[in-house]
Length: 197
Length: 197
Image (cartoon, rainbow over all chains, first blue to last red; front, side, top):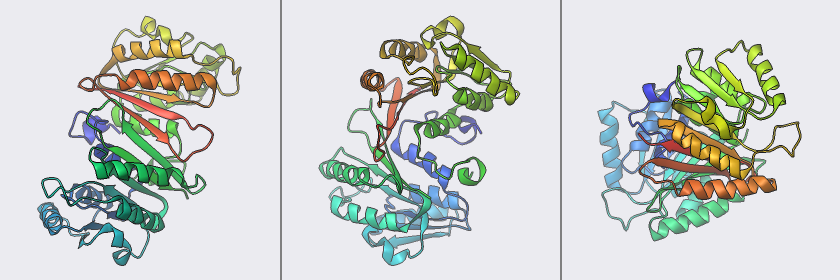
């Protein structure tokens, strides 16, 4: 398999947390899987997940903002995708909608690009949503969080989420973090949690 | 593509630096590429790289220890692989053997498993070999180092290599490090350097 020639648009593979996250997801998410996008935003992760699980699979995508749901619905319809539930609700309530376990859960934290920056994810609710996510995750499943420490709340999220995740028992979880250590302007950090089988 | 069903032996994807390294290499190394295993050891990375580049490609593999070259030659012949040059020499002299640029270079630092622990990689030569590696790397190419901070020299290697790599200019390189933050006993760290196109 040659990623460069077959799978990639950019000629760089290791320049963004989101690109790395998609690489990790493509290793664990299979056609027919059920997955969650905890932060719908502009719908890019939702679209990627929908393409991974295929029409036999299911994506549950959450965002509190009507604008995010509208943008995402538009993006999905442009790609003729129907196996996504766009839920206008906080990811902290994901367990109200999703009752059965899922193969992967993605958080892309911060605020909706090109929208009101005052409306962004918060440590307290993100941590609660993370704990609920671990309950919903299948053995062998993967939880990914892209964290943006460049703004004050993002820095708090980074400290609290890393501190929580680093204490998860190794017998049950593989917790790993990837940082771009030569990038300027507080590059995002990718936190991964694999539930061991 | 479903890694679980198609590509993996273990039922865990994110539990070891070496497994993660192989995932990254499989994204950039293509059939026909020329690559370097800077630390031959038992030949596992050499075998993996040889399978990625295929018979049209070439692997240059280095180790100072005769024992490593013998083990690796045996492993490769068991797999009928002939497109590898096993060189009994230090990776610090890789440029004496490899004159043309390569797509990927792998360092798995520390000592040869099941051998004399006093014979291990050293910061000074590893750092020199790393600098030569950056010269040999093609644009779009990937350099990976698995670093083992559980022994004194490994801890020095971690500090010096991270300090050097973090100062590489973002305009020319993407430098990223992955750590298993909930693993006990000083888990290995994976340092990646992508040369930008």
